[in-house]
Length: 95
Image (cartoon, one colour):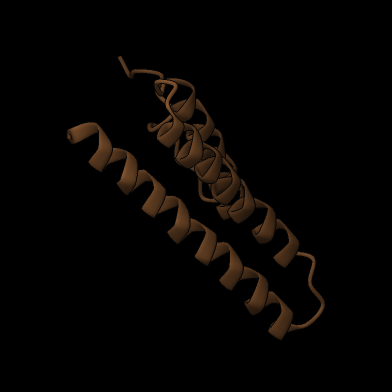
């Protein structure tokens, strides 16, 4: 019997994957202890993960290829920022 798990669902639409990533980041931050550091990086993670999804959505409505590349590059930068925030959380939890 197959377990019903969000990670079992295959999503091929990149926009849907970004929306899911932003949502999972929000769920993750809800379980963090309240501290100055966690609040700071929690807010940063929510902003950057959501921004990557929103910027990719904007990219889909661009007129020129140049504008599309620019918007997608912003989305990639926001994803990198989200990854770094998650790395910081991982480091803090291990100490």
